[in-house]
Length: 304
View 1: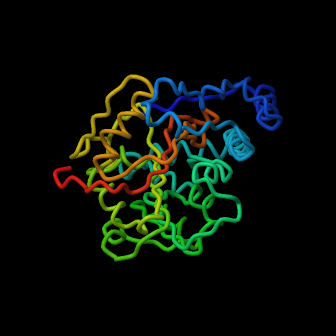
View 2 (view 1 turned 135 degrees about the vertical axis):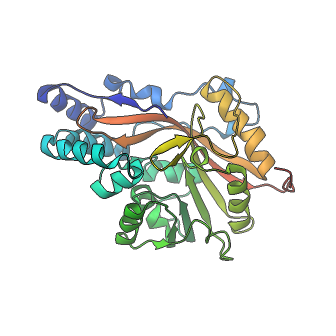
């Protein structure tokens, strides 16, 4: 995974950049590229399902906060030192959890509602957020659910989730508990797990029949790796997503992965997957495809 770094040198440049984010001058940072899609390059069945997104107030607020935090020199120096010491011993996720840094941003509340085609007052019973990290993205979805469950491997991140009063479930517990969920979110996890197709089958069985939805984000181009003991290695089951462009890979994911796993696309959009920066860069960004999927009537292929 190669994060694209955006930065500004010197306090004046930083100040100007913060003001541009505040005032909506997105073109100054080329943010329009984050949301760009050529619908004609999508598969024919996907074209009417594409939802156009833009730089909104929630995204601007995250960028402004990230830019400001990256300018905390002594804090960033401390983070850099601790990270260099701990890197050989624990995962980067756990280091970030211990330091309270590296929060991620996938979508704003407005973008989440638009994808699900719901209003601000919409409520459902249960949300399950798989691989929830520090819970920052889970928090964005919180107001729509009466019960919120989360899974996470990293002990420091689990602590953050418990502080937010989310109900923790084991990574091998949620799919065996017998519970069913109105929404399951699987955000940038498909390329970071050992058995992605098995994960999709478990999710399908855990959704409330007919009305349950999966909100799935995937970084494109798709480059699957899993972190083991601070090292990155190929997963046991390696999904090979075809296509050179964002649109081609979205189409291939939809037809050759989701459909074969018993899902059909309801909506899809292109969003930036943002991460808080450090002393070198104000923030990092990757290209995301965010889908809302529903279980199809097609019987799951037991060979998948």
